[in-house]
Image 1 (cartoon, rainbow, N blue to C red):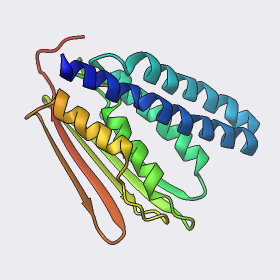
Image 2 (image 1 turned 30 degrees about the vertical axis):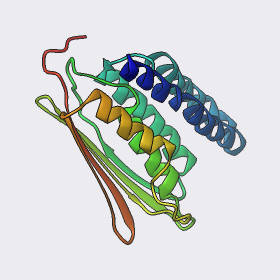
Image 3 (image 1 turned 120 degrees about the horizontal axis):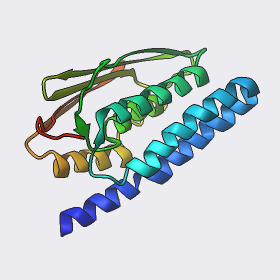
Image 4 (image 1 turned 45 degrees about the horizontal axis):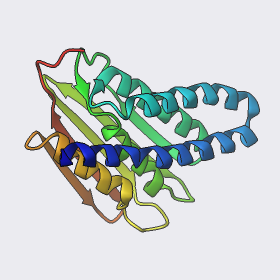
Length: 194
């Protein structure tokens, strides 16, 4: 089936991009603080494991996706501690909800990729689960290299949303003078059990 083939191709495009960025993070941390780098390596290994083993699945527990995101954010907070004002709020209990893997990750990673400023930058992330509706808001400063938040990763995730959640998602992206925001709502299947 063409849709299945396209989804496999889109998921395979996530791996090299994620691996490249994560290896750069590890390298930076090892030079800056070797002891802290050891802790970051554990978090990084967990994030990579989630990406490598779960990215090929159709759906994963939302809890696993949120845990992986939190570890990624811990890595970024340490890496950019002098320049980053990071605030995030995730739900404490996501029940038995499932989601297509790496959908949320792409928008959060994009904020780091395109929001960095030499003098400091900020990222605010709010993830809410209300009944079967998942809401993600990401607001970041617009970085020094003003190439926008467009690229392969973003086009990839937009296409995946269209294929996986047709008529079950709403994506709004807005750019102002200083900030870029993403608002995503996905209607998750209430009856889906782990």
